[in-house]
Length: 341
Image 1: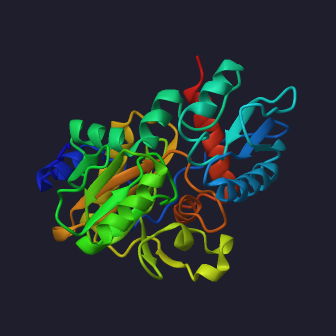
Image 2: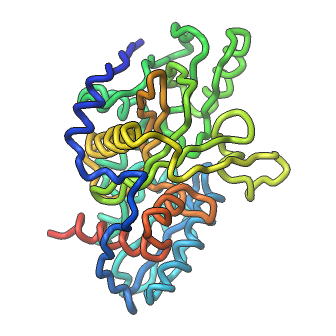
């Protein structure tokens, strides 16, 4: 077991001072437009994948492909089911739209690097770190990023944190394998479900405040989104109601989040610090809970965030004055800069 302490308020204040470029919710002027010319650029959009988020990835990939075509790119959509995928000769960059397993965990990145193909998003090291909630948690603590107290369960161990707590499969995305235990009577069944995803689990202190998410684009923190799920927490059905209409899932998104100027800047600063703590360079979406005293606690970072028509990153970018096609173009430009010699 590895108990991890909650960071004090002074830590997030220090992080705020280190991140002066965070975007304020009172921002009236959008970020300066970047000159990104994708005309005739040959881009392969990799989508699908063999993991549990395949359907979400297919939806993200379709949206990205359409957006890149709107910017003049020559786009090929590639449905990836395993390591033997192919893309057209002359492809200049692969746009990785595969969430979770295979696409977000370093596997795809290694394959593309072995083939000498540039790709969007983070490299192997950043992808492997960010996909692993346990490794991410350790890095947050090492670098002073406030995060909920937690413990690691191995080989059938039971939690020692008091209820309520959250059980997480450490290498899944889109809230797959996440269970909130409000009463001890629920614990055995929830642990059994979580262990279907692996024997090692992360258990976190439950923070009952507002659910927030912050998109990061390069070194820019986008406007904060507050998420109000229709029921439960922001789980798979609430994130992607169009994939399972009968589940009754939905969520209200408030962007910019209705926070004070001071809290807004603190949350954005903490999110940007979390992005930097993992040595990320391109883009991400940082999930944050607002605890007592409006203190932000970082949960995790998504390095291939959803890009569907209801996804959070495009919504925040739009509020910042960045259109969906421009967002996709910026991801390409930042990724090319990351992979430049």
